[in-house]
Image 1 (cartoon, rainbow, N blue to C red):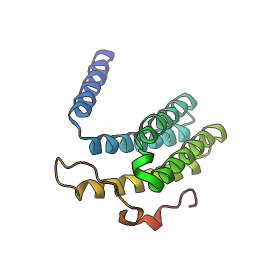
Image 2 (cartoon, rainbow, N blue to C red):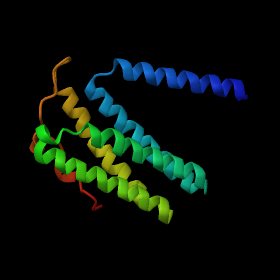
Image 3 (cartoon, rainbow, N blue to C red):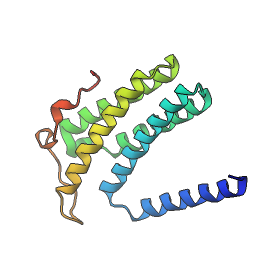
Length: 156
């Protein structure tokens, strides 16, 4: 692929993401954050396996940014209470594990964070399917999240 084609493809991808964000519901935006973080963790793992230090660092930084500047900030601790506080602690733990993966160049923390993000994303998708289109978000209790026991909060 020549440089012009690559630039055009990158521009198209950015426009497609911008349009998707502009038209997305709040629920869909969180889903997009989960998907972006999962993709970044997978990219970091692939870069680590290729010994591509620069790409690994960029992907881990992107995943941490999504978690810290997207997922944590989107929490409403006042309305969400204990569940929001637990999610915040889990997100902070994931950021720590990603930093650890980067510093120690180990894949295990990437796998752990990838699993946690995938489990949370799956639960988030179930919550979205249970709400009618156009409905306002309703606080969810921890018992309503499917497979809650499967979320290990840092223990494999």
